[in-house]
Length: 226
Image (cartoon, rainbow, N blue to C red; front, side, top):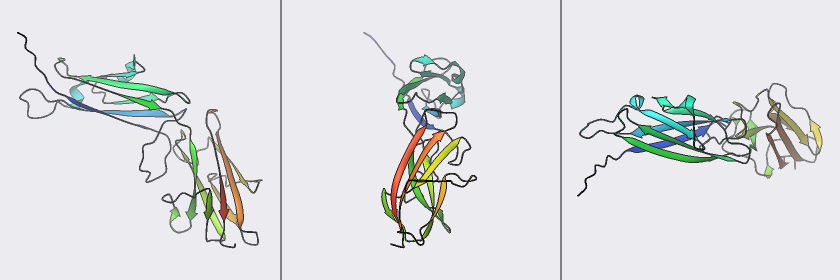
């Protein structure tokens, strides 16, 4: 005969990048080249006969990236880990093993994290309501005003805000390069009064030191004068 004891454990592994996403964005910030990934282990371990869960600070965490132990991130009470992002067009497999000091309770979870390229979305910057992040402009869009301020959001770029000093924007309107505001290079003001009311807005984004970052977009805008 044989006898075994099963002690079920639960372990969730959450993660997000520190890359840029605009306010009220519902999704997860995804990693791009040059960003970092924050991971959170949420264990729910309960001893036999215990009324409460074992404190997360009392557990031992072993973090691995691509099967290699992340020594600096592992140890007692290290419920979170900050790791570098995957290489461009690559992916990393990150896992965490959690156990009690005596080894009677254990849990394991892993996740595959792919790298993405930053992407640009264009928004109308309303003089009263601010940037209308709930309504990205399509590649063919109409705006009723004659003069409009446009803002671009560099999704998943490895920066804290779209006007980071390391980001370099190149704006073009109908093929002509336009200088943006030095204080807010992610915005551009266009006055269509006296014109045909049509504008092809193009923007290219690069990073001053991160040569892996490159993004661009183009939008055909019709103004209220047409």
